[in-house]
Image 1 (tube, one colour):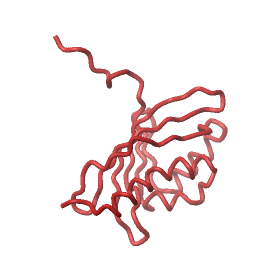
Image 2 (cartoon, helix red, strand yellow; image 1 turned 180 degrees about the horizontal axis):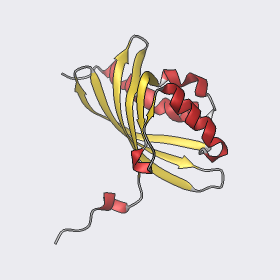
Image 3 (spheres, one colour; image 1 turned 30 degrees about the horizontal axis):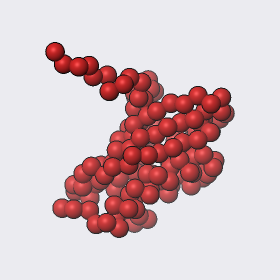
Image 4 (tube, one colour; image 1 turned 180 degrees about the vertical axis):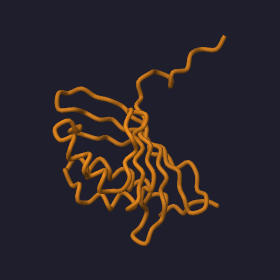
Length: 138
């Protein structure tokens, strides 16, 4: 089953909205991005997954000035549409106050709710090696 163009655009805008809300400090609006029971998986950073919007909001407040000053979400690709769930891959660039930059990959499960599309699961993975760590065969 294919995803209607309007839904595809809504999902892409949802994923893109993350950077704007966080960078603006609009943490009171995270319910516009995530389901109430979202799992925000940070295990690739050596942290336990966060469960629920309140936990994500609290983690951002606790990080304080350690948060990036700019989140650039890009390369958003809707990869699957199965059983009312959409799988989305995207890239993120985070620019810190000192000018340093880091790159991550987001793997999201997005679901349609009564309030529109929301991210129900997000896995954040750092990008630290070229070519995903692959080397030339042979």
